Image 1 (cartoon, rainbow, N blue to C red):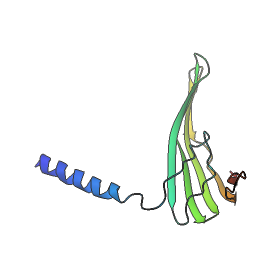
Image 2 (cartoon, rainbow, N blue to C red):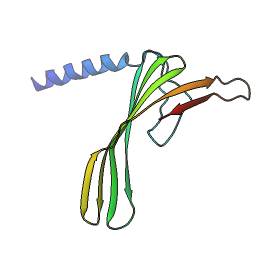
Image 3 (cartoon, one colour):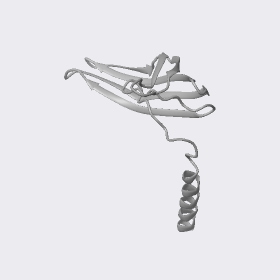
Image 4 (cartoon, rainbow, N blue to C red):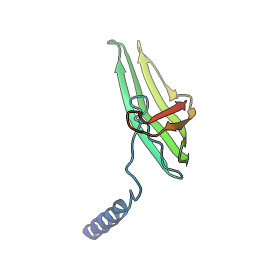
Length: 125
């Protein structure tokens, strides 16, 4: 019985992943690490996440887990963005944790790449 369920699960997984990306490839912006000039296509939703860990000395450490960037393409040149983070820190034995303020913003495509003119964008979060 367990083997039949495993086969069924694998079959469903393979079927769903084969149709996952029918549009163009995803171009990612790792939250607070990298930026791309690409905009999420109109009507598409994309979520990217990661984590960061910082240890400043023997008594202090800071963890963001997860740091998530939520993007939605409103049209061919405009993307709505949210950044959410859960933070946890420890300093001299005192522990604190909680959700950082949600950052709301957008990204606008200014120009397409043409010759030596690079593809450019502007965003505000």
